[in-house]
Image (cartoon, rainbow, N blue to C red):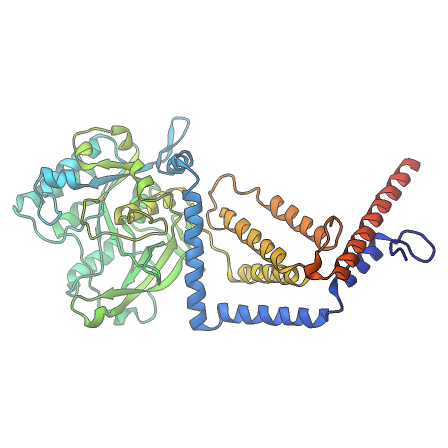
Length: 514
């Protein structure tokens, strides 16, 4: 008997044909039981992901690696696009008016260390003084040192020259950190608090922490335009994906990059207007988000097994890395070139940051784009500067949206497993994962050309649903799956196709009569 017609010989409706096809394809399996099993599996997955600490750490590690994969995918799109990405380090003009300065790295490389026969990678401070004078004359917007000046120089006259250069330039920012082996003297601590701390309430229990700040020498502290910390902290896998924007050590202190931009670009007053709302920082009318609060750790020299001690709280911001170490060479100026006044176009209207890049430097911060060479500390801070100037930090998805995405993906994948062959379900899941990885705007909001991916996802889902319901099935399964089953499914496909053709023809005739 021909199953493509009912007892009256008329073609069945499209809805009835789809229903018959679906029932035949189920093969008598208990649909309710399979859906209940799928929902139970999804509940178990969500519980392991968000509510079981051990498995949560495991999944957090997987998520960090997926983030690295997206960075590497963007990095691999070719040299031309890499050059496009480095434009975030270039100054932005509105007509003739400078809107956003650029960012450049002044590299304390092997050449300058050989030139001045430096000891332990430290250049004579009178050389730094000459560099400051040159950078100011060449039009640098701000000058940031990623170098600690905590010990007196030999000769002492070099300190005088460097302090004088800082005073004359008026835009030099010197850093401090929190790794001193000694407690900060109370008088110096009060001076730091009055000049630099942000008016934010410290964390509960902050008073119990011993403050051990390593600050510039007083002669530099008094003559510089400002200061800030350069504290860093890696993720659980020892990779640096964030910068500690604010550090609590008795009081709340900013990163030196934030303070430099606030004072020179945003035109902020010595004491900023600061407010913390949720995971957002509002400072002098500018919003920075999202901030992730985490404990600050410090490993004391000689401590047992390198045990870390909690010394405060940090508010870290996720970085949108522009490129690898190789890409960052496009914004790097050798120290000797800057000192000689060469490459002025990379100095004028730029925030320049001076840091160690020579062989053997200990200031290494492994990043998500490390493949051949490790990211340097000064490159991480330059990335933070660019992110602050353009406000393009990674915008991470909230927990609610993550749970929703997991439910949708889990339900779709589960239905594919129930309705398709194993290889078809695997292909569906693989393609879905690939599309998700290519949707860079979920973690790279400024990535160009990735916002038109949704039509691809939508069309793919619709096509797969049509294929599942046998709307366009033109092949039959072979003997491996049973000849009878192959024959039934071929007939089911004929039912659906004939019903679809009849439905289209009926609508066409109705339109002509109208």
